Image (cartoon, rainbow, N blue to C red; front, side, top):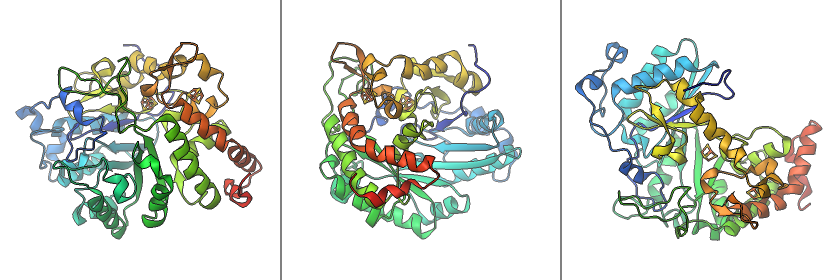
Length: 428
Ligand code: SF4
Ligand code: SF4
């Protein structure tokens, strides 16, 4: 496998220490069914032993057996990931499934290993969780170690409980909100990670006001839920990009819903909250207007910003492409460097730009949209070209609507003034 140097982008991997396993049954989840693709291997006695970790204080940790990442694999990952970084800052992201299905002792060992292998680099961690397993002990650890928590919540109780159910079908909102209060009590830094779906799209203001006024949330990531149904013989029921003629899953947000949902939230934000509340899509759009890379891959020119490592060491191109065709290798047998900067991942990265249909290439909003995420490019354009994003019509509504405000904020920033000046102008 050939490798491209120097590195065009930072080396970044999201690790899934508990694999796709989760304690919830969110109806729109795209990851739970990955269990059919990646059955958990039973760690060998040798893997259970660990290397240098075994000689560290409290080197063995609970929860290493059964489903999940073995101690040896964890140690190899942490050592390699730190050693290969070209910058003094190293960010670890712990993702799922539900990463807190691994016990706190697992993450205490993570921190010990990071310190052991740090070599003077600054290490930071983020963990993305549904929040149900948070306890005071967890919060104390997260606070003391300075971890950032991304917590999944979809709005008001009525909005959240429409799809985010536990294993016996009960809503989870009140337990998540209790966990957020616990995070606040312990001074843990957290961001909200919400989805926009066919249900909560009906009331964008109730959604936004809940985050802003009730949770006092400062950073809000809103991801549109879109899935298509396709039954597979192995038990999976969601379609892949190349599957054709698959019906849209009922919980999916429709293109116009997505556009109007984000326009309504934007109108509220642009009048009251610029510089106070950070909404990922608005930040990314402004980055597009300014001609700088956005902080999120879906609005970037190319993919490949964040690979995924499963609990068994398998590495995939992206969280949304955990399919056999996009497997880059396994860290037991392949170097992270070769996998993340090799031919296959570089082809995956470039595919986002190279596969754009003419409609996108000639679109006035290309600078901020870039055809959005390739996983949703299953439509054909009016002249029959494949590769158009399912949410295109919604993005056109949104970008058309925000354009005057983005123009204004851009000119303020260029003049050295704060973008928040846009709030003085009300409706432009
Ligand atoms: S496929 Fe989508 S989520 Fe994955 S890297 Fe590309 S834009 Fe990001
Ligand atoms: S708005 Fe539509 S046409 Fe324009 S870049 Fe985005 S997906 Fe392509």
